[in-house]
Length: 380
Ligand code: NZQ
Ligand code: ZN
Image (cartoon, rainbow, N blue to C red):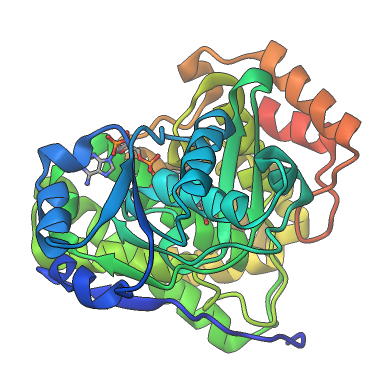
């Protein structure tokens, strides 16, 4: 195990009716701005619960943070926030609203342009922010990351910074999600575990078992959720699994991959592919192309997740990759680029972008533009 420092300061407020705690959780002496997406919260009653809890308090609202939040929109929120001396933000929505709010928090606190903050990779200073999370998927409710898009150049990058002061997770707010949104959320959460787990074995028994516990839970609940999209206990497990999959708990002292996410972000930036769906397409191909490098861990994954105990190591690894693709498909997602009519032209653009940026992703820093091309061709 490598040396590490762990600190996750987010207070998690979980369960039915917990949105009513907002009034206690937000300090009384702050200038508050609440940020929203396109209006799902008005249809499913979340907005009503938020405003009821904050009755009598003064605050302003900013609407319109879109899925895959754009810097162009967020700049407007920063201008408004500065004008009104805002010093506390509450994001009410999915990962996109919260990620966008993390950038707004940085833009208000610093004099820098919002896109320069994203490109720098780190927000040096942010005003405090918190969330009411309405989509189990990204883990943004309990981590310091955010992913921001720039519409005019079709780019999408992440940056790191502060964690939410608190996040309210009420599983009942997920009842209004569609089957496709849930499929994408489950695929995202599962992929987060894979990015941190599927490298090399023998780094930490504890991280391995926690990661395996999350994967087994997600595989167990996914088909049940499909049968009943409004079962409280299933949604509670789904919501907590998504949070734990990316809140630093399963990556203490271990190497990580994240190449699939980087390639997936390009598919979203260029074609608007939903984040979780992009991972369902790219992950099996990443594993096929990097099978030799990842084989020892794939054999452990095969046995502990899919009960594959026979055949050569190569055969077991290949079977586990097949099972992984089947799992994504069982959610109702397609797993091939050709199914979205995406072809060689896009593949070449992504390879060129990676080569021009001089990047190399993955636990061995060997996923360059040329390897990304191979991976993408493998998911045609
Ligand atoms: O905008 P509204 O009207 O609110 O509609 C949203 C949006 O259209 C809707 N929605 C949200 N809650 C709902 C709901 N519809 C019905 N019922 C509800 N309860 O869902 C749509 C998608 O929401 P979005 O926030 O985009 O989904 P998600 O939470 O999956 O977030 C995706 C974004 O997070 C980034 C992704 O790249 C993408 O930009 N990620 C952030 C990470 C992080 N911060 O750590 C890590 C992830 O790997 C990921 O990259
Ligand atoms: Zn993700």
